[in-house]
Length: 153
View 1 (cartoon, one colour):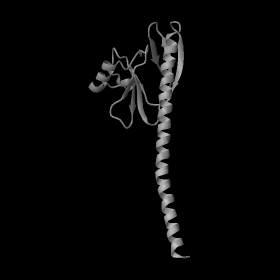
View 2 (spheres, rainbow, N blue to C red; view 1 turned 90 degrees about the horizontal axis):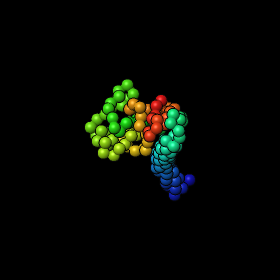
View 3 (cartoon, rainbow, N blue to C red; view 1 turned 135 degrees about the horizontal axis):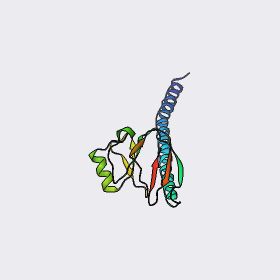
View 4 (cartoon, rainbow, N blue to C red; view 1 turned 45 degrees about the vertical axis):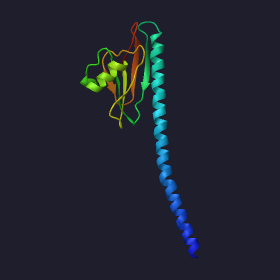
């Protein structure tokens, strides 16, 4: 085997290792983006389900299967007119979150694992009976209570 062949093999091995190293990281990032996209699509479907229940007759109920991806610590449902803490249901209020809720009328908060401040969302008609958070997949019940839609486990 001549010297040029050895250098060509070493160069090829180094190139393959670099491609594998950076390629697997990019594939991981793409998987994470795909998971986030699926989650936010699920939030849009939840918003649609709440709007759908709001148009039904009073007392009508609909269940909604909520999944929490691994990138999310918890999802909280909050009465924006009464965002008091509810430790038994994993909901703790602090000054920053209280300002987020009152200034933006948020009633759904998503706590991502790598962020300090939750992502808020206003969902029309949604008023939970009590403030609560979910940390894993749950079946939630939406109920038309006249002018609002309540949510519970």
